[in-house]
Image (cartoon, rainbow, N blue to C red; front, side, top):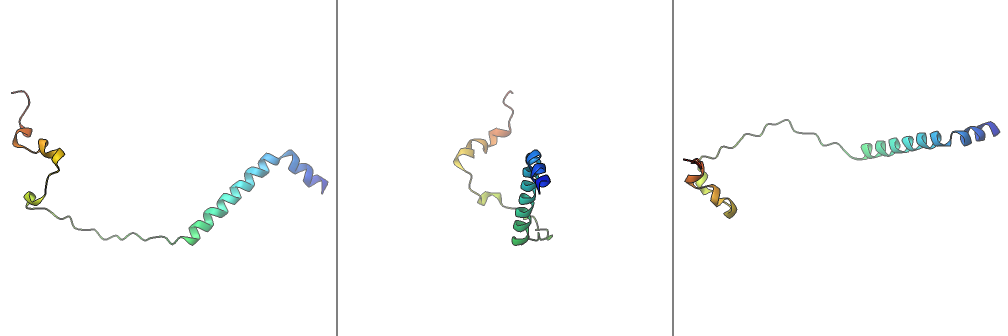
Length: 76
């Protein structure tokens, strides 16, 4: 028994590190077991193309960038 106590006293830092790793592994295992994993559906959702863009309202801060002069070069 004295040999075990002497070993723990000489290597207490390593014992603490190993115990912490075991505790974190146990916590991780318990969290993983208790939370069911959500399966991702492999269905590809079709991309909806908008044919009539005029029905969307433009935010007032973007109105300055949506006029016809925006595509013209600044230096003529």
